[in-house]
Length: 246
Image (cartoon, rainbow, N blue to C red; front, side):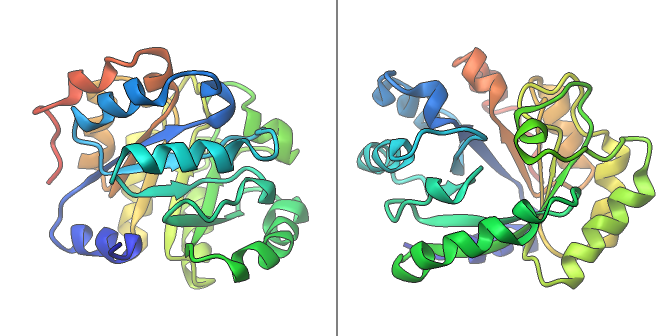
């Protein structure tokens, strides 16, 4: 398969946009993936992110294995823990939680993943992960025992993103958290976009066409829809043929 990251760069160079759907194996356990994948194929989905803050060991492996038998859409791991790594996926977002100061999610989880990653064929994409206050305590916040950055502190968010770029991250991910009341404000997206030259991912609280378009228009290269799709499997049909992706 073509490099996931090279394709992201190619799309960015063409000033086009990508849509990713986040699937949480724990939340979808027991559900038929056939129907879910059919919804993805019927709509303009470019990437499938797989992961969750709390996923039972082994669940991700079997989930991704089933998923890969049903789709050719690239599957990218978005792990909440090193135990969620599986070689069945195409790539992994190698995350560092830059907004927090808990060493477990800055470097310790990464160390624990090395043995698995060295033996795998996964494409590893270093990603600076920045948790933004979305108006509620999220699963990521609880598990990581870190605080999100206030949406009012735009300067700190921008500085964190730039620091991540200087550290060599290949992607910056602005995340309001699963089920966020408020998505990442368009002013934040615009300021981060203006100050970095690597691709920008935005997720959390994206549940309407307006949210999606605002994120794209203000500089997001990839928008991630998770909770919205979990709650309404027909959500993507509202986006079809309406996406402003250039």
